[in-house]
Length: 101
Image (cartoon, rainbow, N blue to C red; front, top):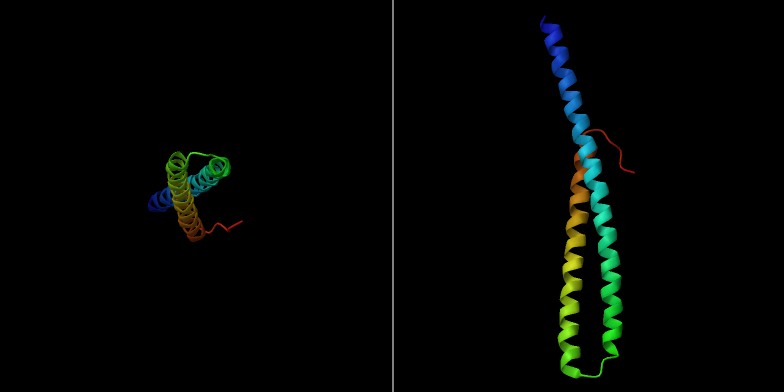
């Protein structure tokens, strides 16, 4: 009876680890997707900065430039955050015996 109980516990633990691995893999994939989307946004903002350089009105140009630069900083910060989350997830996965690829 105790053997069956131990076996059930082992199975539960294996299932729990499997779910955790799957969740971490999904989190990593989602973070990479978010980074990709941020890259597209970043490219569009950079394009806007180029167009901005062609504007004539100095005050409007300066205000828009500051706004776009703040947006780029936010994107960079978000990318760093996602990369940090990916690294944490990989470390947890490696702790569960999953090799990094």
